[in-house]
Amino acid sequence: MNVTNLKKEFPVFDKHPNLCYLDSAASSLKPRCVIEMMDYYYNNLACNVHRGVYELSYEATDLYENARHKIAKFINSKFEEVVFTRGTSAALNLVAQSYGMDNLEEGDEVITSELEHHSSHMPWFNVCKRKKAILKYIPLTKEGRITIENFKKVLTAKTKIVALTYVSNVMGYITPIKEIIELCHRQGAIVIVDAAQAIPHMKVDVKDLDCDFLAFSGHKMCGPTGIGVLYGKSKLLNQMEPIDFGGDMADVVTLDSQTYKDAPYKFETGTPPIAEAIGLGRACDFLDSIGLEEIKAYEKMLAHKAIELLSQIPDVEIYNKTTDTGVIAFNINGVHPHDAASIYDKNGVCIRAGHHCAQLITNFLGQISTTRASFYFYNTMDDVKRLVDSVREAREFFKAF
Ligand code: C6P
Image (cartoon, rainbow, N blue to C red; front, side, top):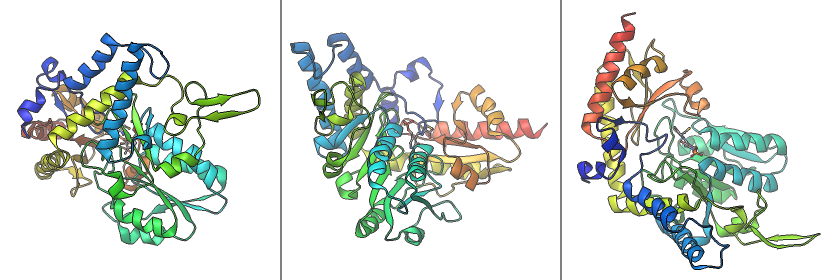
């Protein structure tokens, strides 16, 4: 992986040559090829898909559906198992509101964890409340991990649904999801995987995992905002009711009946995010050309170098010293992360501070807020150094008060 050359693919570095971007877990930067692909659509086609009976619309439809092919190939699914959504949140809510509402009964059990992003946990809290189902949490280890041993403590014959993150957006831990899926299937439970922080950073193969549903967002994987994917096994998608009704998803509509198109189209109501889908397809090709396993190893190496150096600064507490990915969470004891962030910002270091839409794990850590640095393949050792220097500066500045 040639990081110097790869960085040249990101126009934002032309505008901000000193940018030290350590917030890719929130949203990655966008490469030129993705922007150009979206520009191509807007400059040359700009029309709707699936509707126009003219050449321009046919080409737009081809590009849009070809993007679905690329995504299916990227995750090793079938074409019709890729549902375009607005993002991970919309995808996970679709499963909860449709599959969850129709399949859960009073007393059934749903398993999730304190490691979840709100978008993976809250939809199930809501559905369980309405269906009088029981929401259970996997006990985390002391360092905040999900283990098979602890998962077995909550899995019962009443478990119907398991909703888990593949990679935690705060701790960067990888969940042993394949083994969990195997255990669940033996009990007849289905598994929904939140892969928002996995897909951009490691190879994800839905057939190999045998997951029932899997969700991710374009904007964290070098693609555009406003687009994401729900992967679902055909058998399950075909059984499910849509939750949004209207344009393009209808088949036959009369005064007293309505039928829908087959999946994935019955879930894609109205004019879709066309340029965004095309851009996401291009992003898949781009990531494939770099190599997902190389990306994973490289960003983990950067994160562990940062952990080693940050550990040498007094008062710095790191919450996930054994992170499996490029995500690190830390604080300077006695300094609010938002105060420290003003120093990082002055130095051009972009990090995130807060609860990261994951209040359960922030509470688990006994904090109200943490500082998160997240590395991607366009980061360098120089970025690690700038982060560490800025943390040292923030500690000295605020501790002097
Ligand atoms: N996490 C972060 O800074 P959306 O916003 O729908 O594209 O993705 C939601 C989501 C779901 N699951 C996980 C594990 C996530 O990390 C996210 C988004 C961002 O951590 C924004 S809060």
